[in-house]
Image 1 (cartoon, rainbow, N blue to C red):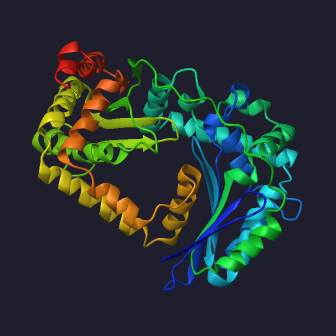
Image 2 (cartoon, rainbow, N blue to C red):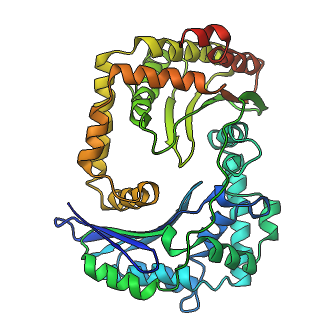
Length: 429
């Protein structure tokens, strides 16, 4: 791999990684703005802006945007998260300039046509409805609300029908002007690319994105925990649990990730083996950790028969408390091997590589090398993993949400308090 970085006078960073064996390239624009940057009256505007990027510019209609890329066999897409918004393309190597031209056009020259805007707001309202009809999406929306109460981190990225109805082209232009600044933007490309050529194209086409760093959102604050039972007539009960995790730059992050994998990161994990393989209580159960700039979110999800929900949550609480003190060298080694394999396998994809580089620039100000990442994983020990697990279980009260029907749900969420009862906490210190 050959990584090159150029910072333009505007503050925008261009980073490329040449992968000589490829005939294609993945490239995109990542900007450090997302759902958590929105004011209350802007709820959902980041996601709407992402949608509107493909709905026409002063140079191209919405149809011309997709036809130009698909005419050369490429594709376009975009994504919004709490802290970033990305617009990206995958093309053959000779079509990299075209992709840069299209990506710059949709951000620098959006038309925000009134009819297209109303149509796209309607599309997102349908997306909101689809999420409400998808239990494993809906349950996490409730969990986020409890975990980050009364703040943007706890709100759905989609917005609401009410907030969407208030957005017009002037609000979109204002939001774009306020948050899309060169110092907060990264153009990343990986695969069959030439760094100097990419820099020249970006310098010519993104000249309008300059200025100082955009305003930063208020710090996130994990709430005081608590529980919520959402009654729905469903075949399964959907159970989720959250704890305050660690931010992106915390030195204990990799140890916490190892614990997360041991607990519920795969088929060999403790929860999968105990809950599914041994007891047959569920089809799916997993844990994950999402690290943000100033906070972290440890989450657990499972689905089960409503009658089995109390037993399920009791087992989960017992396994979490037990794992803190009894995880083994073999489990730590297995989790570390999974993390290293996942890292190295991702590097074989130019799309994954471009995204990784962009996120590193936004998070750390530079790309972390593979050797650095492997070294951080290798440095994790049984002791550091147990310490991180103890910190996790004592850092916050759990936020718990159960979605479904049946009397067992109230009892199930009550069991989750076992993670924060004095007896349980005493075991962790």
